[in-house]
Image 1 (tube, rainbow, N blue to C red):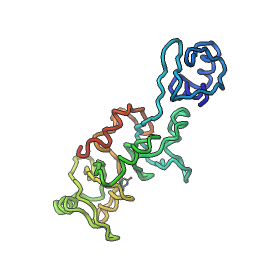
Image 2: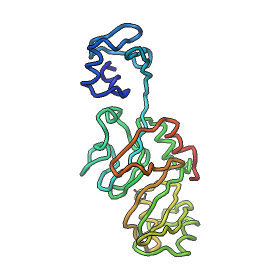
Image 3: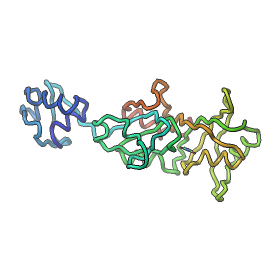
Image 4: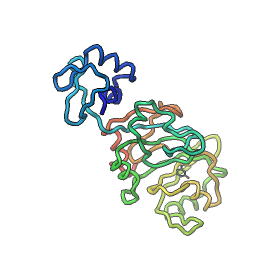
Length: 238
Ligand code: URA
């Protein structure tokens, strides 16, 4: 990897900032001062110091995004804005993928990472990672809805879903919290349609034990440590 890219990716500033650092002689690689910004380094085998401090190589990034409605959670180009448009150039340069999509009109917790096995652990159906959603509905939920969700809804196309949690939430309108352990296409919306209800607003609150940070406004994001990110699959009953 180029030295300037390495330093920028490790959070030392924009390309312009790190070029200044490099040309000022503040950067050493394995004990040798390097002043060429395009010097190539082996990020796994060589040690990079800035002003004498070791800059550890971080191969993976984990990003918690509060996805706003109107953004596609796919990282590929589609119609309209995509969540990666919200990220800084440095974070985008890691080419993160999405650990569990959200519909374009949905909001809330979205996890992005370049750690492929992590994504697999979060989304694989065998792990039964619980995802919680806040929904606004066109009518209130009934005892029968709760029972049907708990037994496992059969969708109109015949798909039998696993048991899900449903509880009413007080609010200005008909709100509920839904807990599911799968991640089928439009699953929550289709579950409500099958009991004659309609989701008019949907927000993901948590994935496993990882809860959306309430201080993040829609469109904001924060980097998680790998320890924090792991909560997304370590706790399957949140
Ligand atoms: N269920 C849905 O219907 N949509 C989502 O985005 C997530 C779960």
